[in-house]
Image 1 (cartoon, rainbow, N blue to C red):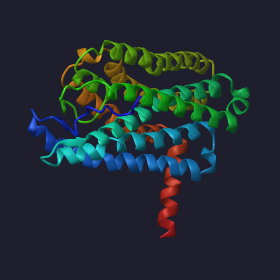
Image 2: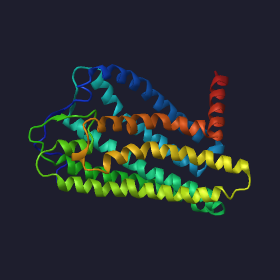
Image 3: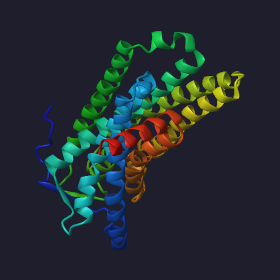
Image 4: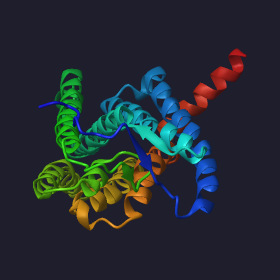
Length: 312
């Protein structure tokens, strides 16, 4: 099967907030501020996790991968959004749209599964502490992350490729800020019930199943934490786990509202606000959530900043 539909238009017009032009300048300014913040915050997390020996643990290995994912995730959409919001020409080439479709969904699918792996890591650390170093050894960590990336790529390539085969009947207008699978399915003409059903079934495995595993892990963690006699130990466990839970709900909430319902039932503005949320807001907030609620990361970040100024 060819990767690109031969009857495709040369470019797509991304309507975005064309019906609310007064929103474009504020949104442009917000993206112009939050995108560098997201990049710097996630780069800082990666640097401190690599440079501080105290953070050479499985949890920070997974956190480093999450930060890298968030950087790629937001980069796959924000530059295009800034270009469209800042100019009168609100178009994206078909090849650019296809590339964005693949990369955006690879990062999104991988992040869904990585968040589940991170909750499993916390489960083993708190509920099975004596087996933690054995279960989460370096080989297992690399295997888990590689599997997560492979699954994310498989999901994105298969779903995006099938979506790109849908007939558009000369339509080249997308009522969205970016190229996203549900919106392309909704825009397509002809019979698309099979595509909607396939997307829903796949997203049950990519969203609902990992979320259930996360909630089950944290139910066990909550039970174990209440058994910890030390108040300091309980506080540290709650601090680490609450950060992860906040990130989980920030990401999964909007994603579920977009992908676990038929594309035909999605309202006009829902994809725009949801994409801004899980593609921009979440990657920007993640570093601050993990930093503000984690003494080890705050300490390592402070040490890194002091060493930079001392060297100067």
